[in-house]
View 1 (cartoon, rainbow, N blue to C red):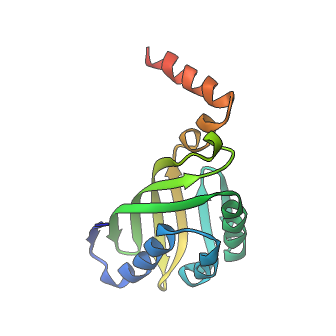
View 2: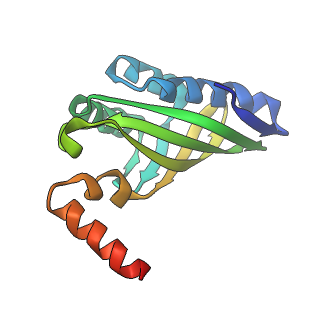
View 3: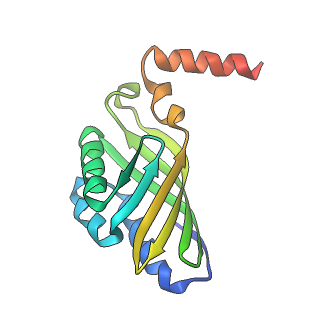
Length: 152
């Protein structure tokens, strides 16, 4: 996979490369890597929750990954400017409660701040409805019907 990278901060590219590698094949066997990549006081925000501290982040991923069949990200573009980076990604995942475990995809972006070769802040942006709600029986049908009505 080719990753486009725009960077004026070569020193921070190493930690971003490690972060990209972690998310390529995200599973519970890689949870120990989180402590090397993320700062002990990391702030991690996504549409599902906000976590502060490495223990809370490891617990979040542990809980999340135990329920998923698989999850990995294809990070197709990376912009690094100073101590910040933006990663553009497509997540491929499968969860037994969503579409009977069928493979799903979701596009998103991560904004990352780096200090001392560790991630101190990460905020993920993605459509939570497209990730979860649209794939839950009954609720998914209602959301899809509403979207179709709004398009008219």
